[in-house]
Image (cartoon, rainbow, N blue to C red):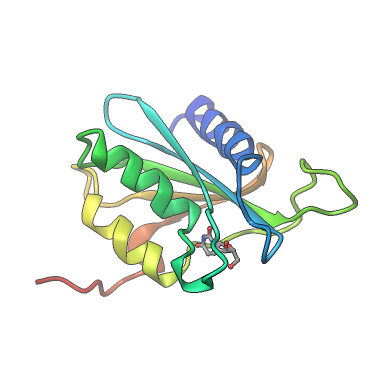
Amino acid sequence: MKQTVIELLINEAIKARKMAYAPYSGYLVGTALVVPSGKIYTGCNVENASFGLTCCAERTAIFKAVSAGQRHVDAIAITGGKVEDGDMDNITDFAYPCGACRQVLSEFLPESCDMDVIVARSTTDYKILRLSELIPYTFDL
Ligand code: THU
């Protein structure tokens, strides 16, 4: 994955995190994924007073992409954490995708058969993981 694409995805995820609707947990998550054409889709978490209805940022982005006709995702960047000292840009956590989101992502692998999952605190502080290492055995029908 090109360095420019990695940085673009992280920057888009950081921007998307600012849109998070997380009044109950205070934990803001932003994501940005790229499809083979190079188009980027972003997402944030959307909470609800009925807590179980909350949608994670990863699923927001993937549902946007799939509902626009996309079926393959090359990479997704994830940024998440509570707002520290009122500074939205100070992201101290590495936010790994939850199990449900790993399973959902696993249905939209690229031709190369694995997806890069970038967990980032900033454009210079990130890890690149493979979806297959995060969820080696997916549920399938
Ligand atoms: N959350 C995500 O957006 N993605 C994950 O993979 C795990 C958790 C959100 C859901 C909830 O709004 C907040 O983080 C705290 O759980």
